[in-house]
Length: 263
Image 1: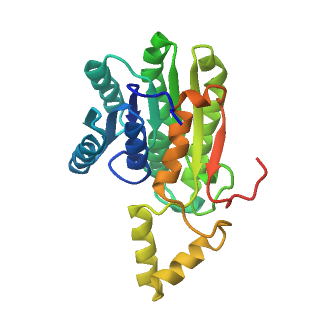
Image 2: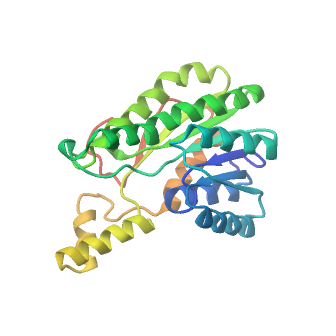
Image 3: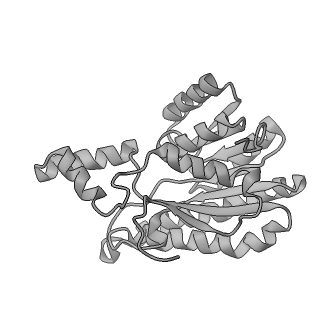
């Protein structure tokens, strides 16, 4: 399928590894030119170079922390300076620390707000005027299945990612008038490097084998396995495409069937 995004310009956050990198690679494979962002400059430059080598597309690497307003403005300014347009935003940031309600002091709540929700508010303000200018835009948020089925141990993610979905839904109708579509993907468990580290740490701590720990994590996933990052990237690429031209304001989980709720 031709997704119709060849030569489109996309900003992808958290792109040095994991789900963000997979999304960047998929968009570049479809012919998009990229700005990739992450906090670790060395990892980001390595990723950008790998994508250039594998796809032949232009990849601008901008080391940035999207919980910082100046870094958000700089990301967009450097993108426009380089490409003179902006079509696609993949809003993806790292997750806040785990824990229950009583585990987090004020500074954890404030940091999670800045990272997960306020970063989106600021980024939308920065990118939408450029999309409006061309009467075309796609914004895809990467959230979590915790917006559909909260986990007690991830209260910061539950609260602020749910706010992100509400924000996107609220503004989707007004943005649609300018042919700017905004959707949220809600990943479940994916076999990223971060998840592999979690599994290995759990195995060492509990004295169990890696297979035993993996079986515990996947027991509640109907398809019987964790997802591969490329599978989520396929959904993100679809939402970025011409084929998704009648879809906006949605929040779709990609979780192997783990969420039990109807909606």
